[in-house]
Length: 276
Image (cartoon, rainbow, N blue to C red; front, side, top):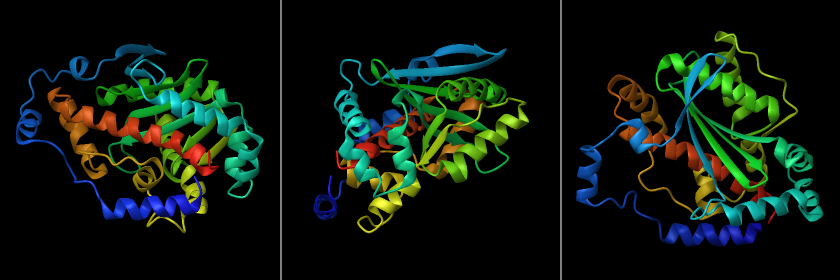
């Protein structure tokens, strides 16, 4: 997508902004008073043990029937393989060039959900990676504070297998944060082969087009999607603490969805950055 196309999309969306929410009164009442709000009912997943530590894993393959990831994967593959894409990347950012030169199966897209800033636990690590079947998502959830060790141990395995990270503000936040939490838990991560921070790349590519380069701004104007009913980042820690205290996973479902969409947006950025 060229800069002229982006400007046209920006103008069109500014003329017809979507409402903040499309919930009806009945839907809002249902949200406030859910029925069965257990984790395994609302968010299907599986209990896993890694190095003696437990966690809950939510899996999704974006090429499954009914998912919309097939077309996205085709565009991503084109961005990773077409010589023209690499030439365009060279005009944008060195980190983008290194990403396109990497083996696609070495890439690990990462997004964290934490209980706050430095010194607080990480409770959800979302990762997306490439398999022979397409994009696969694992969301590693700590069902309580003790399971932080489990999600860190599983994340360490994934980094060992796929050592080229792709994040958004991950060089300043995600990687230092998760590394510090791993050190506290005495979990050692393998060294990275590369790290592409798409915040830096996005600023270079879209900074003169968009009003800001926040992830959801890029999502709206590049991907053409505006989230409805998305949980604000400032509310995420309290929602997680509420789940740990009560076992009610209703608000946690919103956090998992928020994390999933962040991961999808990271993958959507790659072809957009090189006009695929």
